[in-house]
Image (cartoon, rainbow, N blue to C red; front, side, top):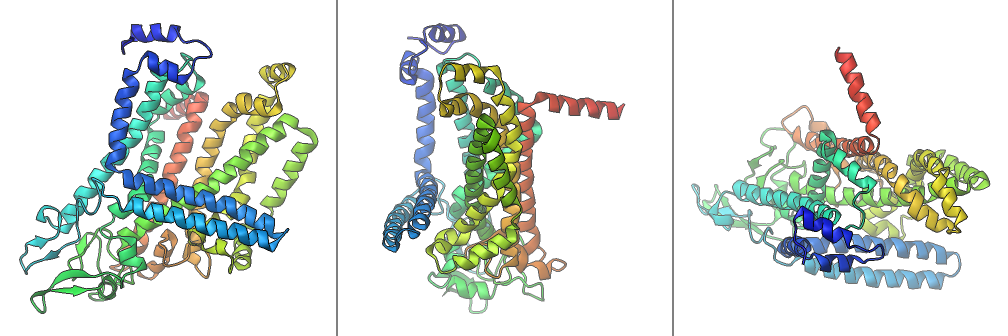
Length: 515
């Protein structure tokens, strides 16, 4: 049996047949795969509930998207068929939601139950009760956040490590173009910064309930359905109050004592890392909830737009002529439609439709963003697709009788997908800004309250920017800027990794300018 040394790896690779399966390659040298899988399973078990919750959330969105398409399609044929689709969608979505709630309720190593931070003082000088190891809520919360972030970053690294192991031990080819791209990206500091930012925001979306000092349900959506305890300085005793009533007396309005700033406690022994909103709700918890809906909506929108643009770019480049002209005319027509007007029209038409309740209005927004974004992606991909369609290997594949679909998938898509990642990552920033702007405007646009939305936080704090409650607008605004900047950095890194001449040219220009 082969071991992990370089010479023995070469021996294993030399015995790989062209038609060998991945399973047979792993059986020839199982140790690297077993070690990687053991660590991966341990990481999964530690946070199984959070991972299952994220997967089921995405699955629920996919189910809703597919059933929505058939609902609209069958609506033109028969209202009965459309009603059946809606009934099926409701039943399946409720089932997935039930499993998701059960999964998120599973105890995990880094959960709020394991490292609790919500507690209260037993007296005027302490100690703290119901917190992790009796620590102050701020310290208990910080420990949980640091552990979750470290865990998440290590998971991303381990996934990448798995690809490296596959490339080193189990891939048939000794070299692929993606190797040079990844190697250049590993030396691209700006691109790495973007990847780290993106990983942190994905962590916020996946582990938002555990990252916040409280939960969205307790502090924002159902604040009068729970009770918390706190030490009252007036009575000198531990009392009970609902989060809703506590929020009412913890408002940040920049006037007198009505301000709970970042990294402070309110009068109810609750710690607020980012302070509170004008309605007294915890801003950090609000931002974590907003991260989840923002990334889901923007990810769904750019995913649909990229799917449409990628497919149409290869079709137009492969067939050209009339088909290319038809797609070009359609794209020009879509671009001519004002996005804001289309959003208002769609919101009005579907106001009483069940689609308006999906993802708290975010699903309709994702569809509109995808519809208005794909023409820009298609225009960016059309040039590279036309270029690769004229290569000799495409003509050779045609002469061998390969079907157009196979040629596009095997010979054109690998060349186009790099450019698609570049322009998609940069376009995602525009979608996030537009989504925040819609929530900022309100009036039926954007994410439906009380679901957190970053733009709504900026809107709530715009009257207090120059006062003690500056944190309400500034912190959400900075988070939007950091995320969009990170996405653009990822796009820059991928672009320079795909086309090293662009990076080399910029360095030469910089050197020349310095001289």
